[in-house]
Length: 343
Image: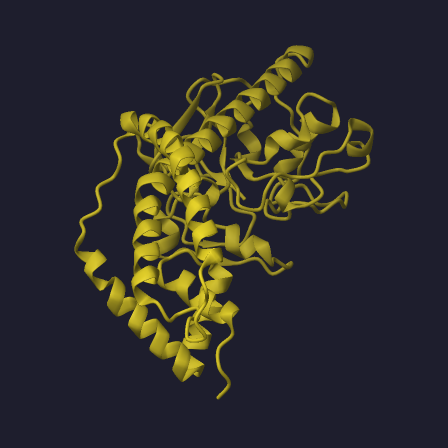
């Protein structure tokens, strides 16, 4: 059995204190399962850090987060100078041949404690502000989309942007540019195609994939729909064919963060579309904001953030149809009060 490299030891250390990415976590688990030395290091680190588990973490109140960060920034200047002095001292010290990456457990535990402390004190508030920033930017983008819709209706006799579709049309095939396809995203694409809304506004800033590519209106005119699913990470209402609502109703959702029901299926979707609801799909929130909830754009132009999928007096699930368990991609609401945002 070959000795572990410093990179592998660093990977184990990051994994043990919770700083490893999803990919590194999987690699670390494989290494621990296949290498005795890695398993021993993992066991020793976890045993050394065990006393820290007795510390009860307390969330930082929202009103103190900003002041906490300001104080930490001030302390950072002093700490940076001390660290530079420490590094200079260590570099001038004669290094023993026995000193290695894992030889001094005392220093390692001290470093781990410091990292865990700053993870709890600093990373929590920073993540809170980051999530809040993404949520507000998402709401601003929805507001921009609404202004585009409003300008369109003003110039088109009050009609919402609507591309003609046949009864029973499939609503899941986003990105299909053929004439026969008619997913509901084409209604939103019409706003991009005619220059009412910037294409990037249809991608939630809270998405882990990052923002969509930008392109000008002349390029947009070449397409019948968004080029692919990643170019629109919002879900729109699927309407009843014979009762298309063609007015701006203040209490009706016009758009919401991407539906969590069909997200995984659409990622590798073919022409064979079928999904059966389970307990997870009935309750999980959109992935756009860390599963904490979803922004919803209402017909009157306001944007609300709901922490559950239920909406309105009827407590209707905005991402599913009433009394429908199996979906094949062409279902529509049975009544006007059943809101269904997809895909």
